[in-house]
Image (cartoon, rainbow, N blue to C red; front, side, top):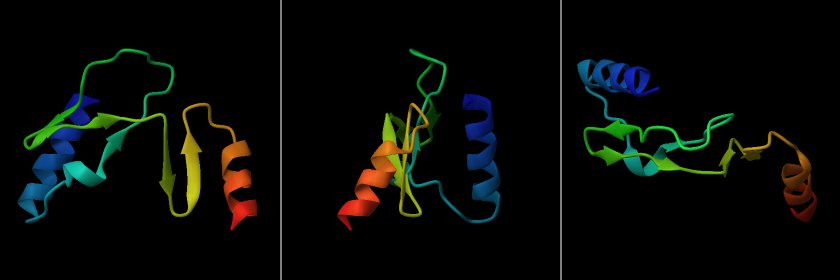
Length: 73
């Protein structure tokens, strides 16, 4: 994962772009205590859930939390 992240960061830099550490997270599936993923600006945070395009994505892959969130809207 570190290798792919480093390649992404290098390609973005070639295009004049930056990977925003504050807006980037790592969610580990089937891996408990893996190596910390680093950018030039620091380490990425490990998260158990996040929201992507309005849908809640969880470590377990279930949809219960997303459905509950949408019902409350």
